[in-house]
Image (cartoon, rainbow, N blue to C red):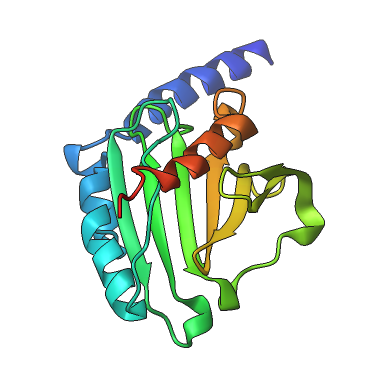
Length: 184
């Protein structure tokens, strides 16, 4: 009986060495700068211009970004069927540290998404408006949602870096939209 087991193991080892899979260079993941444009992402500047042109209105983005490293910044204006789904998306991501993922989504207030049942805290921004902070483990991101200039802004940060990019950091980023101050 043990002789059969040993022969079986030897045969298994011999046969399994022929079934090895070797990776080719073409099997490596596609770089973000190649992949993301294929699904509609462009430079942030171009996406913002398309968004502003579509709505014929200026959009202000924050001057600050989260204090974590990013290797890529992309933007995408989604002009989908029906105004309700049109939005701007700005993505900051790292191909070295995938958890370093920050996103800004902007849409007109009249087509805003409701996050009311998910908010866990409310903060006051410098301009007097309120910002709702949301932690929902099902989506994998922590959100800061607020309105200004008839736009709804949704900032999202990967929950794996939420200890570094806290609600207070997101508030600072939101408040940076007000700079530089305009002189009249």
